[in-house]
Amino acid sequence: MAESSRITARDGVRADARRNRERILVAARAVFAEHGIDAPMATVARRAGVGVATLYRHFPTRDALVRGAFARQMETCARALTEALAAPDPWQGFQHLVETVCALQREERGFPAAFVAAFPESTSDHAQSRRRAERDFTTLVRRAQASGALRADFHPSDLAVVLLAHCGLVTALPDDGAASRRLVAYLLQSFRTDTGNRPLPPPTALTLRSLPIATDSSQGQRPPGA
Amino acid sequence: MAESSRITARDGVRADARRNRERILVAARAVFAEHGIDAPMATVARRAGVGVATLYRHFPTRDALVRGAFARQMETCARALTEALAAPDPWQGFQHLVETVCALQREERGFPAAFVAAFPESTSDHAQSRRRAERDFTTLVRRAQASGALRADFHPSDLAVVLLAHCGLVTALPDDGAASRRLVAYLLQSFRTDTGNRPLPPPTALTLRSLPIATDSSQGQRPPGA
DNA sequence: TCTTAAGCGGACGCGATCGTCCGTTTGGAC
DNA sequence: GTCCAAACGGACGATCGCGTCCGCTTAAGA
Image (cartoon, rainbow over the protein chains, first blue to last red):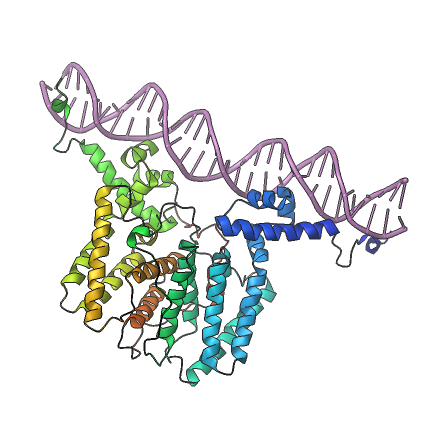
């Protein structure tokens, strides 16, 4: 009769519930990749083979779902930052960090827009992660500047500028890794002190003609948040 | 009875119709600036003080409305390109062009997303403008490269990369001119051959914490009126 | 003034998405 | 096997935006 006797598993979650949760996350990644993170929740549910209610039970808000779906990518980002700090050459670390995060944005469609939700202010642990990430990144910047490779007037906030711009680019051109690579290469060059022009990845096939039509609003443009 | 006798004005448009058209365009710019180009058509109509039907009569599709609303900005872009070609120093022309377009994207909110719709493929005259713009820009690039100021591996398609990235940035951070200026400065530097680090505009106040939350799609609703 | 059609506006039907409610199923402890 | 709470799923009412339809208003030529 003790309530503990009713707990069904180590973590108190029934097997089918855990299974469904995983199916939902897989489906969410697929659907977000196809239709952007504004895709209907019902679509995710159908893809996962569960009812809408089940979806909402596991993830009460779209925000929670997005965060759940891209948790792994977020961890990869965090790891990249740790690795960057550990790298013997701070500039190498810096460059690798930027390239890794941008590669994630480029490869996992839906993730770029989700990224900025990565460090939600609501939950305290995440706020803490976020603060730590900021601190670590600032340290990395200082070191890279001290080593002479990163220009002295680079400001840690420039990372946000880069990420938002890159996010916009890959959101507009989901298939085009070339554009993303090109942008990143240009930006990294402008961050260096040693500024001899270095080889770039190949240019894109874009023309003004081929730019996506704006009012086809199927693309999730990110609205500003709080 | 002759149909020509019924024509009511020089251009065959009644005075109230012309007046309403203008009011709609003003309202559209305001509403697009506040809520993005996906704002409900009815909102534009209400703001303009006309009925929905009137709005649809003048602009049958949202696309037509967007194009009408930002026609002036598009002309400014076209003029900037012409001026850039006429500039004595091709690099100056190039730089001025990029800065002008980005300034427009930054200042007229809603325009950035609209920009890519600027040269619709449907109407032949616009397609022609677009082709001409491409040709002119390519010429500008060649000249700037010949002058030695623009790096040889800059490709005209890189303009699209810049514009899309910048569009993403200002869409995400509508109020923040600093971020836009910063990005443009970085990119222009990386386009130069002469690559000594030059002074940058001041950094932004962004932190990872302050990045907009992706899935809060509630959009910062304006507290007053609307 | 009179006439007429160009122009106007709001109501309406349609379709999509949201998030909840509630009856049914099922995992797993005993 | 029995039981029950956890979990499920689909139906449902509410909301929102779209674009059209139709009766009314009004500009402006005669």
